[in-house]
Amino acid sequence: MMTERDTLHVEGSEFVTRDGRRVRFRGLALSGLEWKQGSRILETLDAALGDWNANCIRLPVRDDFWFGKDPTTSEDGGEGYRAVVDEAVAKCSDAGAYLVLDLHRFKAPTPEHAEFWRDAAVRYAGNPAVIFDLFNEAHSITWDVWLNGGDIPADIKKDGVVAENDFARDVVHTIGHQALIDTVREAGAGNIVIVGGLDWAYDLSGIAQGFVPDDRGGNGIAYASHIYPWKSDFEGKVLCMKDRAPIFVGEVGCEKKPLPFELPENYKDPYVWGPMILEFMEKHRLNWTAWSFHPVAAPRVISDYDCTPTPFWGAFVKAALSGVSFKAP
Image 1: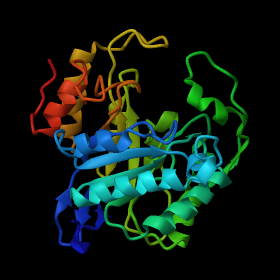
Image 2: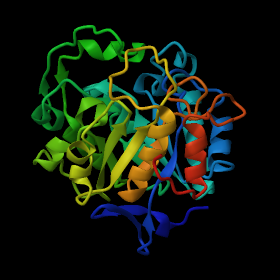
Image 3: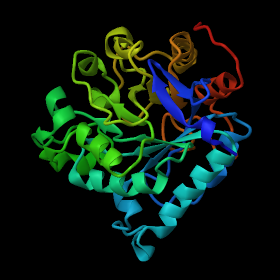
């Protein structure tokens, strides 16, 4: 079981326990609860914490499922959904691991997202196993609006944007990420919060240039970057924050071709890119959870519910979690 001394806070670019031990996250993102109640999520969680040796689990959830506002959770008002999340928290705690609770929404935060954090923050306030990933992937807004909120234009439908982002296209006002932090702290939760950058949570350069949120007296802020093969300029977009705060690569992965959308020319073969990115994260001591420990949600770490590693990504991830160091081919 976890003890009080395992509660984390931020010191510089590190996660640190109360007794001064430095903790670095290497783990898995468990997709499923952002689509529906996720009946097999706990089954895969056992494998992730056991055979795969993850010390951190990123768990995507949705506010409408949480409150029973969706047909898949409305019958019991979301009670069953919340119970699954509670059990996942307990399993991580018992295993000595950490759970990053990810509000899996897109574009920009709204008052509904603050309502979720008001409830979830009270529920998990002070729980040493739980860290709050406040908003999945912001995009199509300025850095000032990202931080402070404001009016934003509705998105124009674009080819190649996955269906789960459809609901984000009509957002015309955001409260900003600072408001989410304020909500958590006003609810009495000092838990570390993770704040993702722009460009679908890849770009941290605006934070490095001064758009820095205020923690409001909590245990600290880490910053999320989601890295995929079509992203570039790691130095300018990710490592710009390396010495200022912990960087949490909450999504990272590669998929064998073809994918259901056009890949840019700089996409590298996954058998090359996978070892390269694992070496990069190790070299720079980045925290990470590989996307996705699910047999359908690409890029796939596993190919089935027996948790068989995919040869193009999962095999490298499992080796890294067991302590293997990679050098890119």
